[in-house]
Length: 74
Image (cartoon, rainbow, N blue to C red):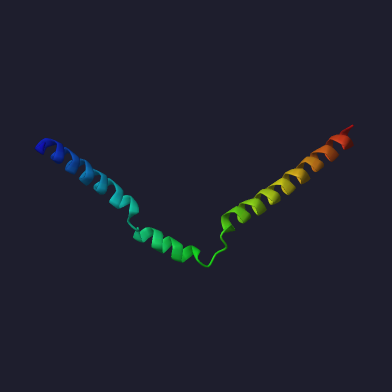
């Protein structure tokens, strides 16, 4: 009986030791939230979308120029 109680106690303590760090608040997260608080929530995504659109535009211009060069040679 005593060993069962000890086993349960150790199990509960191990569970608490495992869960406690997961629930604690990290100082790095607080600093990161302070930095991001002034930015738009989707800033990184909108910046990536704009960058992708610019790259697609440049690629299309390059393809058009190559097509024009090929048409001129024929």
